[in-house]
Length: 395
Image (tube, rainbow, N blue to C red):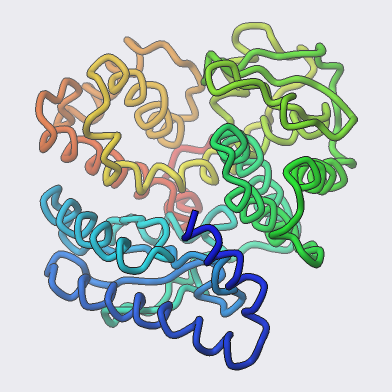
């Protein structure tokens, strides 16, 4: 309660010149502490702040310091040492936010796609001599699609947990993230808006952004294949928080155009599985060029996956499903254009094409090595130079 009241006080007074300057001091101290921690781990070649802190658009009390660590020689012990160090620092500096790790060899593919790739050229170096990556070279129309995809992803994946956790400040931050991603102005007093108003703001901004998208005649509800306990529910009316269901039975209120945009821009695997199971209209295909763009955009999230603790500790059967249905499917698609999801076919393909990959890892270290080897292969065929190579498979 004390921390919540303190945060509310900071939000109300950070526009005062003297107070605002004082509030920024702990943020600078946190950034310096993170840099020192990164310098203690030889495997880390560079540390960057990203998001609003990197661009100077942050506000004390609302914004976190999200960071990306680049590893020259990734190892599970190094990742865990730095994760533990940042967790300890977070107890002193609660503004330290998400910690992301990337293998140096995956950096070009990461920075070339999605709105996170666009933003990476504006990362703020905290440690190391590596300059911010600059591999995103797409036009305005492509960037607009990337922005919309990212905003839809936040709405689909991040808004429900914030609602179920009764974290209004988190919900305000996520709503602000959606608005900033879509390049919309933040209303005055965003942090003090009630939860229904925040949901309405997030929904209506995406509704307007997707208004020009084709909207096939979906049924009133559509079960998710990727997340079996989730249900897309169609509506044109801003939802009430209760319309999102419960943590065990999540509903995602959206317009038909929002759902169409999400499936074609953000989650190609969900789109293809729904198509394969006859849940989408037959006249709702995903053309090859758009599918490849969507897969490269969604693959950006894959490059940080080996470094997440849940990837190492997931039960074996769930791990295999993720491996075959996400990473190895992505690798095979980018190499050959094959869209099918049969796990035995994906396993056969990888054993023939990539026999060094151990598809039955038994220990955390072996899992980490497998995931890292896979994302490196995905990155090697997703880099712009590889996709433009006339010798590469055309999909």
